Amino acid sequence: MSKQPNIIAIDGPAASGKSTLGERLAKHFGYLYFDTGVMYRAVTWAVLHSSCDVRDEIAVTKIAENTQIEVLPPSAACRKYDVLIDGRDITDEIRSPEVEAMVSVVSAYPGVRRAMSLQQRRIGLRGNVVMVGRDIGTVVLPEAPLKVYLEASVEVRAKRRLLEVKQRDPQMSYEEVLQALMRRDEIDSTRSVAPLRPADDAHIIHTDNLTIEEVVRKVIDLSRGV
Image 1: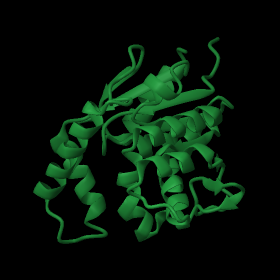
Image 2 (image 1 turned 120 degrees about the vertical axis):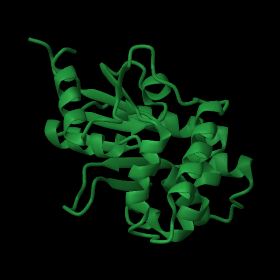
Image 3 (image 1 turned 30 degrees about the vertical axis):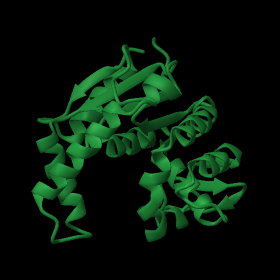
Image 4 (image 1 turned 135 degrees about the horizontal axis):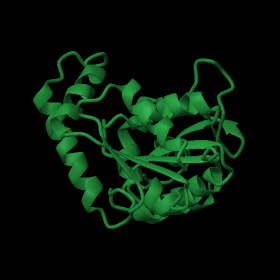
């Protein structure tokens, strides 16, 4: 009988369904759900609460290298996880408009990405985790026993994302969402540090014609073969 994988790495482009899949799997296995994007939000929060200029790449990178970030199981039912910086709970604060406005700037710095990859790896190697991102199987946890890469056409992903953003911005159009995703895909796949691509041993799942329940079932079935 095969052993249940204690680390599950999920990668893929924006709006491919990674977060929903990660949450469902973490609940199924009783693991920590770790959306690595929260680390970049946490660093952005730290930068905004310092005297550092967010456009100063060297200073921002130094903060990323010297800030201890923890992602832990949720302390409240309304949360997916807890995010702490140097012991302070900032889970709710990292969703502020100020952080939202600057996180793309901070996360683009190569030094920040390297520093966050190290912290993500530190947490991931504890095991019993479903880690979601864009470079988990290739860079952060290449030894993960189960790696999944979700794929979907940009048109399908745009339709999915539009359903989400319409709740916040009813005026947003499909074409705007589509163009934003295409720009994000270009950035993710061509960046010099950890470009988006499936790991050589990742299980690639095309989700265009699958429900989330079908994708979850596929990954659970894959976990039994690890």
